[in-house]
Structures are given as structure tokens and as C-alpha cells.
Length: 152
Image (cartoon, rainbow, N blue to C red; front, side, top):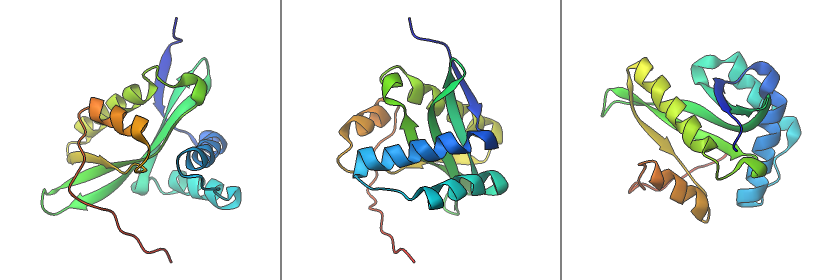
């Protein structure tokens, strides 16, 4: 039997776990080693500046089992806000049990309450086929856009 899942807005005392999950996710999906001296202050910064977004966590038996971050992007084309889902991670022992689905449904519910959200976006590593399959199963579709960046 699967333990009960609680989806909640993350609290500042979740920062260490969120940072650890982000480090694990980057290593698993892109073989990138994130610097804890950078990622932990980066996680804490979102709690200090809630206008930038928020984290949700999935909790099982009092332990954080999954997390995601939501940030916003204004769309003048739609006169609304896109919510970007980022930093998605579910601990290996909790995968394939509906945790991401539950977190995504919670994001959708919060967006409906907000009233100005016009859609959801996320980016996924091109070889992460399992995640892509999950996102499609929830009604998301691949866009015609490619993402470009320049780091400073």
C-alpha cells in the first residue's frame, strides 16, 4: 500500500532538502555537478523573494519525497502569466507512484485560484525520455520553440 501524500508549499526549513534534490537531479539527468555553496543560497533566495516564485513539496510519512519550483513569465500575447515548472525531483524510492502527478495537480489548482495564469511551461533534458512521457501523460505537449541561453 502506498503511503499518503501531502502536497504543500515549501517552507524555509525545507531548503537543505530542496538543494540536495536539485544536486541529485542535475547529476542524474545531465551529469552536472552543482556547487552546494551556490545552490543552497539560490534555494534560500526564493524564500526571501516570493515574488519570483515558490516551491511545492510532496511529503510522505513526514519526509519530503519530491519537490518542484514554479517561476513566472509575463506573456503580453496572452495578457497573462505562464508558470514555469522547474527543478522537478522525486526521490528514487518514491518514483512511479504518482507524486509528480499530485504536485502538478496542486500547481494547476493554485493557478486556477490565482486567476491570471494562462499556461504552464517547463523544459526537460532532451534525453530524459521517462520525464517526457510523464509530461505528455498529463496533457503537456512539446512546443515549436528551442531554448537558447547565454550565461554571464
